[in-house]
Length: 192
Image (cartoon, rainbow, N blue to C red; front, side):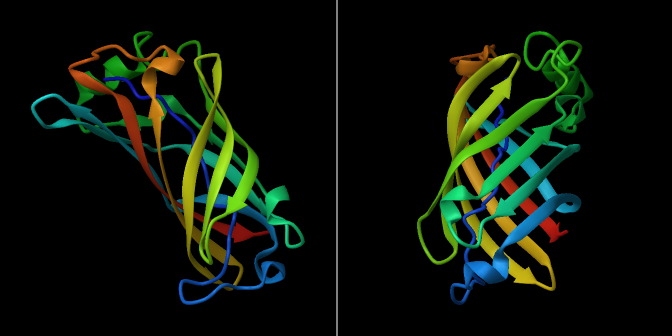
């Protein structure tokens, strides 16, 4: 029942590329963007044998996206998630997720994702590879990002990926609950 987070990973589609109709010049998207909690979300799902499973979200996170207009591969994504903000809509489950069995929020207050490479895969998409750190364990993770819009200094991405909980010592409940955590994230940021 634990989540191996990412971090969103993380995360973010820095490999940005144009509006949804056509690619924009990287010079148009170039800049540093602060991820806003308004219009952004980090959701996760963990499957369960027989159906159902666990769905939740993180309410507090922060990060930046830096798009290099000259070389998209030099772009960066940095994301910090605060696991104490996890919410499933079930108080007992939330308390368990915050306990030392899963996130151990008393000793591990942050989950971080720091990109190491951004590879453009299409006009509006990229794969972001980076280091995800949770509970003192760091592993390389990949997330797919899709640019959804860019207007007036505001940019938005849809980011998804899957992370193995066991890597981060959060695999309590397996095999009844899947070892895979699926992330579905929306990030909105303003240039500045």
